[in-house]
Length: 466
Ligand code: ADP
Image (cartoon, rainbow, N blue to C red; front, top):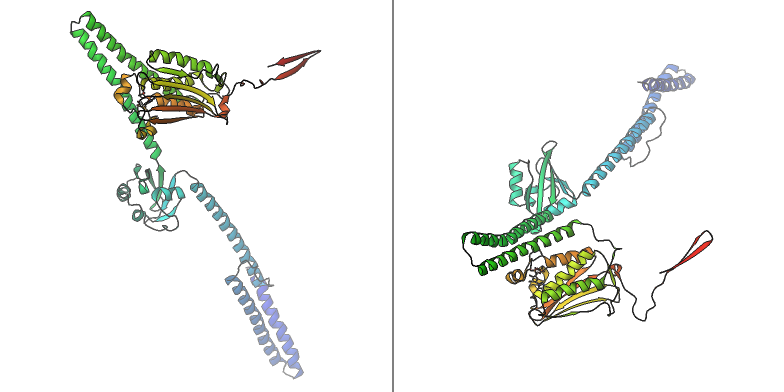
C-alpha cells in the first residue's frame, strides 16, 4: 500500500493547484468560487487524461514488449512498469535455465547407446532419440504424436503393449528384419510410458555361435568315445586272437589320438582368444622356424610328396625376423603345411616360401598341387569345424580347427590369411605380416647397419660397436 498515499497526494495537490489557478482567474471577473470549481474539475480531468495516457503506453508495452524496457514514467505507472519488467526478466531467465537443462537432458538421452521413446497416456509418441527411431523404424519429427502401435506393427510388440504387463522385456525382429530388438517398458507419471530398446543382434549371434560350438565339440568328442567304448566292450566280451587284439588296440590308440588332437586344438584356440596380443618387440627368426616345420613335414609326408622349402639360410630371406609369439607362428605354419600334405595326393608338390615385399610386408606362402577347394567353400574355411569333405578330414587326422587357429594367429600378429584355390589344381595359403612386425636381415651386397656407442666413466672412454 506504499503507493496509495503518494498517488492520493498527487491527485489532491493537482486538483488543489488547478482550483487555486481557477480561483485566481475567476477573481479577475468577480467569480472566484466558480473559477475555483472549474479549475478543480479541469485539474482532475487533466490528471485523469495524463494517467490514461500512461496506462495506454504501459498497456502497449505489455502487449508488444519484444525485449524493450518498460516506459520510464514518474510515479505510479513508472513503478508498475519497473516491477512488471523485473518480474518478466526473472521469469525469462528461469525459463532459459529450464530450457537449457531440458536440452542437456535430451542430448544425454540422445547420446545413449540404447533407444528411448516417451509415450503419453494414449501411447502416442512424445519424443524419441535417434537410436530408438532406428530400432523402431520411426521418424522422430514426422511420427510425433502418432500412436506407437500404428507404426510398430510387430505382433509381439503389439501384444506386449495391449497386455500392459511390463515385468519382462520382449524381443522381436527389427524394421526390415535387420536384426533383433529387445524392448522393455517402464510406466511413469500419469499413465505415461518409457520405452527402452536395445539391439541384441550381436548377442543373439554370439549365443547361437556358442551353442553351435558346444554342439560341435560334443559331437566331435562323442564319435571317438563311442568307437572306443565299442572296442572296450568287444575286448571284454569276446575272446580275441593275438592279431585281432593288436588290431583293436591300434584302432583304440587312433581314436584316443584323435581326441587328444581335438582337445589340443581346442586349448590352443581358447588360449589364442583369451590372451593379450603377442608383443611387437619379441623377434622370432624365420629360418629356424621353417626348418622345424620342414622336418615334421618330411615325417608326415613319408616321402610321398616333393617338399620344396625356400631355405632361408641361403635365400634372400635369410636371417629375417617376425615380431610375435614363436609358438603361435609355429602352430600356424605347421597347420598350413600339414593341410597341404594331407590334401595333396601322393606324387604332388608342396612348396613353402618366405619373402619380404618392397613395402616391407612379410609373406609366408604354402602352396600345394593338391585336390583344391571349390570357390563357394573359400569364405567359410576358417570357421570352426568347417570342412569341405568331413570324412577325408577325419581320416587324415583333421580336427576342423586348423585354419581357424591360423586365422587367429594371423590377426593377433596384425596380419591376414589369404586363400586361393582351384579344384583339381591346388591351393595357396598366404600369411602376411605388417611391415612393423617384420625385420629384414642385411641382403648380400648391402652394408650391415652398425651402431657405435661411446661412453665415458671417469677417466675411461668405452666404444661399443654392434
Ligand atoms: P581340417 O582339420 O579338417 O583340415 P582345417 O581347418 O585345417 O580343418 O581346414 C578346413 C577345411 O579346409 C578342411 O577340412 C579341408 O576341407 C579344407 N582344406 C584346408 N587346407 C586345404 C588344402 N591345402 N587343400 C584342400 N583343402 C584344404
